[in-house]
Image (cartoon, rainbow, N blue to C red; front, side, top):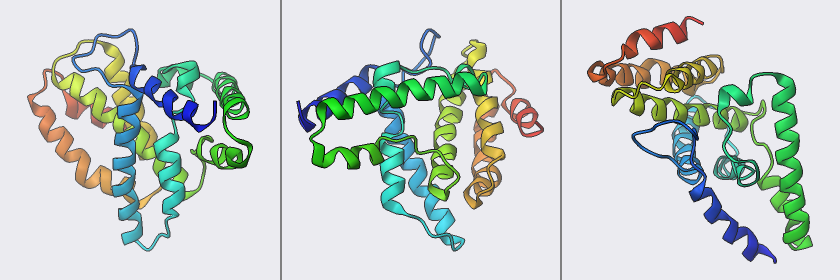
Amino acid sequence: MGIHTYFRSLNDLERIIRTPGKFKFEEHSVSAHSWKVVQYAKTLADIEEQHGVTIDWKKLYEITSSHDYGEIFIGDIKTPVKHYSLELRSMLQQVEEGMVEHFINENIPEEFQPIFRRQLREGKDNSVEGLILEVADKMDQVYEAFAELQRGNTEKEFIVMYRYALIKIKNIDLHCVHYFLEHILPDIIEEGNRSPFDIRQITEDALSQ
């Protein structure tokens, strides 16, 4: 019981594999994904600050590092499935948030419960920090899918993942998104020239949506 239970539960995130049921050249755990999202978000937030945007860094670190904690209870559900309909997404979010709340009530000392509710909440919202989280989360999908396509993985899931993530990113109005599209994505496309797939065409198709 107590915070020890929370610390022990973090091991579970190392055993939850993303994109389950599909062949992958490289497995990625939810724990590794969360760490990468924090790294992306730091740089994205720096770009925003360079354009005069004020960043709440404490909030940013809290929501990026803990944004997938609820997957301990429901596992990793593929993004296209999760967002198949607003109703399904809402139901899944209710289940996840309910189980997180139950975990906090059952295991976290009362004096720390408000802190844990804040840290483990759904962090994607219309605040600049919430939008950065959304971009960072989708960037990791881009990179995970790109790595599989570059190696010749014929699972169509990764083309869908790559396209979906790019479409989501390009529709978020942030300075860091413009930077990603203008300066980072071209490097991805250039590196993708060695892929058996036409990464450039897949990218252009996604950006035209």
